[in-house]
Image (cartoon, rainbow, N blue to C red; front, top):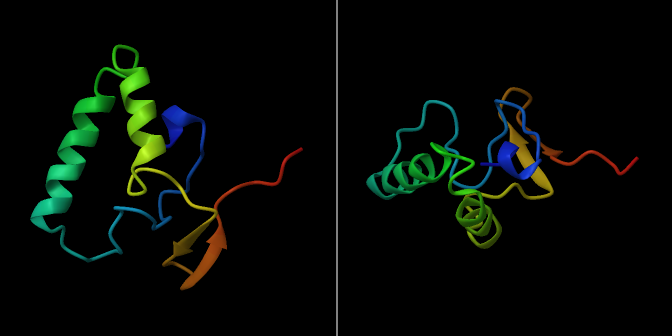
Length: 82
């Protein structure tokens, strides 16, 4: 979802609905990811709907700071403007 909205993430970034490594997903998280998958499966067909979802649901967006579990610290998620 972030990539479709032109926000690059590292695969180990933890934020929003993304669980920490080795943390099981709860039922409500599974429902969220199912909805996310349904929106992004045909990205061109549902772009406006998925973009709106990304903008209004904090679990789908990427905040300014994410947690890097590899280094056990928060990090900036956004590159400075060029």
